Length: 460
Image 1 (cartoon, helix red, strand yellow):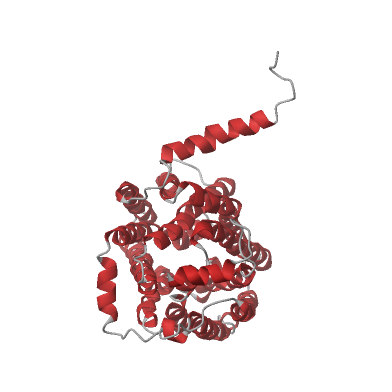
Image 2 (image 1 turned 180 degrees about the vertical axis):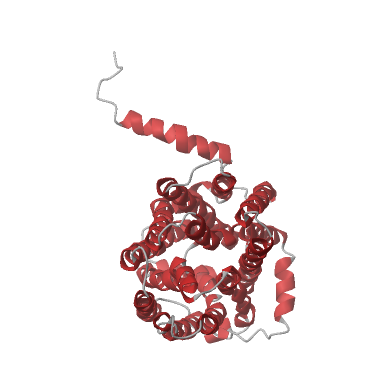
């Protein structure tokens, strides 16, 4: 196959099971890109929006912009192969990065310009940011699929996840120290400028990354004929099932991280820097486990690890539900522990999922297939924050009932449904979940203990 030939041309000379040297450029991009999106799309963005005067509904819309505009990957897929994945990535990432500079002055204008105007400007800039990001992001996974060999994809995604989370962790810890307990406007402005500068520097790594050139003889698919390709991809049953699972998971989970920030700030009056700190703890959980999970998914399959990740997320949602009902306490130490487990659980699901998607993608239609996967799951990913943003404001205005309890309960119910649906996905080479848990909790620890046994102990 053409993809295999490309992969072989990139990895020749590298020992089996090790990552090729060229992945350093890809990982360098991801490290700086993590600094960029952590500020522009993560916890700092939510805190900045609240600083400018945004309500829950607007925060929900801002959170939803990123996944909703992934729909632009479909029209981008019509030209990606002819343009080249690298050129498309550079165009989109360059545009979105320079747009961030328009947000930098906004925090300085709080108290001088009416809040609705500041929030509206932030919304328009983030709209442009996410439009350019959505159009370009569809080129990333097909590009990786062409240059990362199948046998080490789990390993690569584990290392990539660790690299991303290193950038996220450093950014969140630095932001926590910089913002303090009550941030001023200039602090938010400088932090946004840092995000833009990191984005500009990340582009240099994209330039030096291999592959991504226009394919010889490639033609634009055409905006209308793309729907024929989409239909063929959708009717490929294994791929359709994993899209359904990922969509159900996304809709159940996607509103939680953003509104949990609002919940901790409003209900428990946790300071901005402590919210950043617990977010960093979540990243630390992911950082610790990512390389291990990547190798485990290559060895034991994706499905058992996804099962463990979804089950752990269910337990965490039950925890937050019991906190909301007043049955459990929520001091900063307990919240930090919950965030750490959340990071581990999310990574246990996320890394194996991408590997599973690559394996299930219809042969010869990877470009369109990966775009379909990201577009459909992103619609659910973006729909939940918008829905809950308006519902939280509505319930706050018309009732004394805590809307966050409803959010935690409904998300838990949907996540349980996703866990049940996971059983219908087939992965013939995968180990059973119970067997993997046995190896992780019993067999391997026993081997480790035996390895440290003093010489001659127990011998006649």
